[in-house]
Image (cartoon, rainbow, N blue to C red):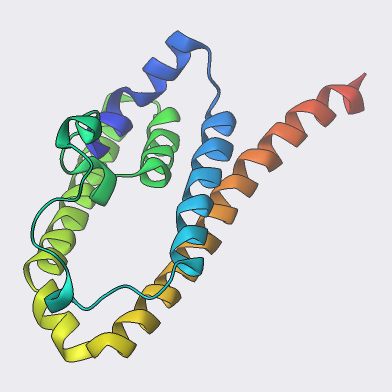
Length: 169
């Protein structure tokens, strides 16, 4: 999803007439909303206390998203990926080098996500309930700050684009 967002996201946005700053504002807002819900949610039960069966919500209602998208590739990371891919460098050598760097970066993130998922149960057991809640709140706050930054980058660009023609006219 991230590689596709980097490589073709800007073309899809152009097709629909959506600007990168608009994607940044929307993506940042969604990231902030998710982080806020994590910050204000009640404490989650320990891993050993969580039910192993799916909730009352049928799986078909959640089937819109690919299985991994909501957990690993969300709106914030997709907006950042589209922003990275929106300004390709000039020249074939620079373009290939940049595309390879993007793919290597995405692979590094994928390995880190795999390691986190693979050892999540061990990490959560070592942290305990209180440590897990502290870690969730801390990462939610950092995620909120990232969302604000993504949104500000888009707003800043939109404001500049409105003020720049007025300043030159």
